[in-house]
Length: 144
Image (cartoon, rainbow, N blue to C red; front, side):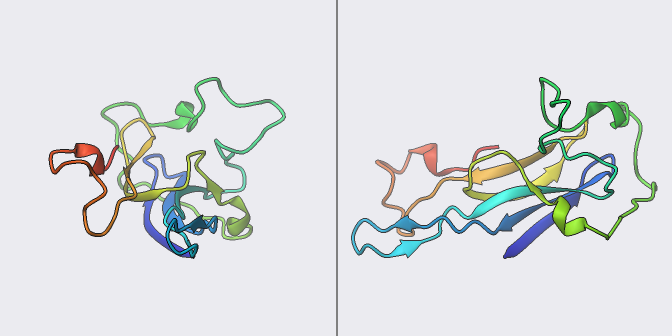
């Protein structure tokens, strides 16, 4: 695996990171070889076993809006700087959960106000830049 870009959520309850751990190969159309261009996804780790994963199944279900629990997110104007982040190491690896997004090429994972996370998703394109119809085609740029 290649794990990168670790960040804590604003409330300090989770560690998020990008990881290249997907092994779902894509066939090359010319040679029949296999490659792994879409192996990255963002992952979330609750730092305490008492903190529920917002993506794990629960007998009570998830809130209709999904995502991180907004109840414990600091109010606008408050800051979590200087607060202590506690990590429960036992069982940490079993709490790693992928975000429910398709595997792709991701970068620039960053926490935002309100407790969420954002990242860039890059399109798969050829190394020579001949994938797009014309140079003004903006589809090769990443999306937020």
